[in-house]
Length: 286
Image (cartoon, rainbow, N blue to C red; front, side, top):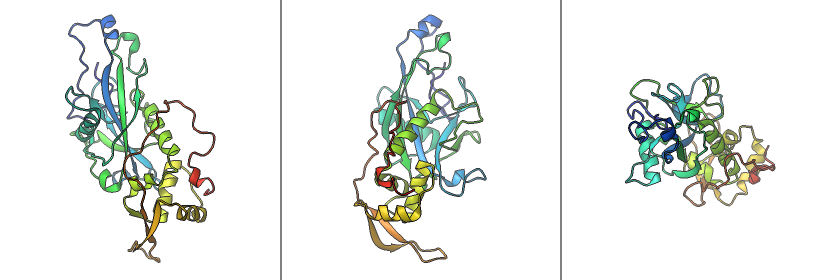
């Protein structure tokens, strides 16, 4: 059985270390194998701009088409094995670079997924696999670095909310992982820091609103949004304006808060989302 992680054609899918000649019962009793997977969110990257992409930005993520069993031909999260001489984050970065060419500025551990039935054929004695999942938000300039596999079409952007639908689903439990990452992102949207991860140092209020709308999946009232955002201490106006449009150039704003990662919580997958809107700072923007 190959690993539960996705592989690009060049990686070929490193196999789990199963002893030669191990029978079904012996494989089922082996200690769990460890793998690394990554969830990378971007606002509608150029490579994903098709007739299926709506006019407003949406969240997308890169997926890798598996080239070997199990789940051959299906899409999966980028990932790979953990080498004996590297840290978890180093393994996440190496596997991400090998499969997609992406190198996010910030990459953080999201959660560990180790369900008993994650492998494709547990009833046939497949070795159990535990995946340490990392996640990141990338800006357009970083998203442009996505490369295709050796065979055309094996690495591509997919809409985060619909990835795998109509295609037999994502490989393994990767749809569950993506849904959990989306939930975590939405639960932290009250932090202006997310805009910094997606947009960079400066941005217009309209661009910032598009980030919120993409993550929440619903439109926000522009006037209410502007009023609320101007009251945020971590966002301040600059003396610069965005040039190049046909109308009056909008003012650029700057994120002044703490740089760094997303600081994910340790709430387990499947935990119910808050009954109140987790984005406390935008409750009245709709």
